[in-house]
Image (cartoon, one colour):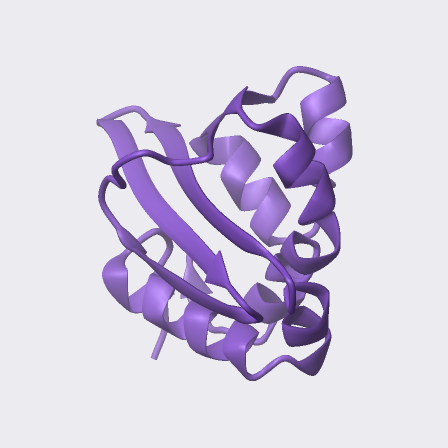
Length: 127
């Protein structure tokens, strides 16, 4: 059964897929980060948070106190990223993603974060 994109069930499934992904665990092995994603929708903002610590990820819907970085994008951009139709680097370069906070930390996490679309591709998601 499909899970709704950006729902708590979606976050749980993405988290499970990434924690089972050896390439993600290796890329995030020495990382520590708190990230907040802000997705603009016609109904308002949807927020979800990500924490990465020593090769594992936790994530959920809602806010996060004191994020290292906040990443903002439209719903359409979030869907394109999730479906691997757009790379995060390209989206940032053309202004479809806005970043506040520690850009260097995000660059250091690029290997781990690049595993997100692969994990999402294994899920049945209702966009």
